[in-house]
Image 1 (tube, helix red, strand yellow):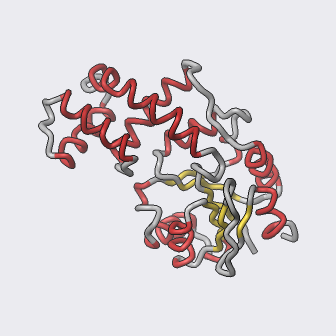
Image 2: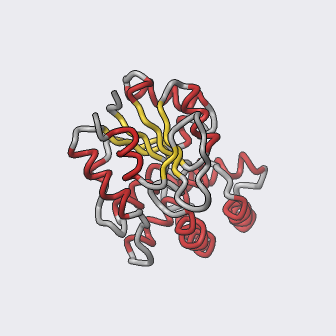
Amino acid sequence: MIRVILTDIEGTTSSISFVHEVLFPYAREHMAEFVREWQHEDLTAAEQLDIVAEKSGCDRTDIDGLVRVLEQWIDEDRKETALKTLQGMLWEQGYQHGAFDGHVYPDAAEYLRFWHDRGLRLYVYSSGSVKAQKLIFGFSSEGDLTPFFSGYFDTNVGGKKEAVSYRNILDQLGVEPQTVLFLSDVEAELVAAESAGMRTCWLVREGDLTETDKRPVARDFREVDDQLLQHR
């Protein structure tokens, strides 16, 4: 019996276009100003810049160089934890200033509420930082959805295409793998979760549905519920 739902964000609860056409450009546009303003004022920002310098080989005192590295990582959609942390701090400003709302599909919001009210425990696992995850759901177009989640996971537990990451999540949740349902639009992530023993469902919101006997496939959260949860 499924007792826990672990969900991806991009392409699953939220549109890929929101992330790539709104969040990423905002971070790129404001990164230089943010780094120069907060490099000495915020301990978290300073620590992340230390990591960026170490990973890139850029001199820590070369602020322009660090900004160029971060901008390049944004363009490449690099899954660097330091970048994701800095982006989360930047996006917090954007949300608070009303520059944008977090996009969440109406069906996702409806069923997150519904599943929570039925007693399922809901968690997020995304390559975006935990801060960024809380922001997209806290300032969402469908209202504040954060009360429905029991916790959040980011790349601090490991990469999303690595089975060990899902085992790390299971260790933290303290539940049997078969009681967890992982939702994602990326097949490689589903394969990794299945290797850890989790049940999965492939969200294909756009384009042709890929029929497979390896796992259920759904257009939206309503179909997830119909296929896997309605008789719970």
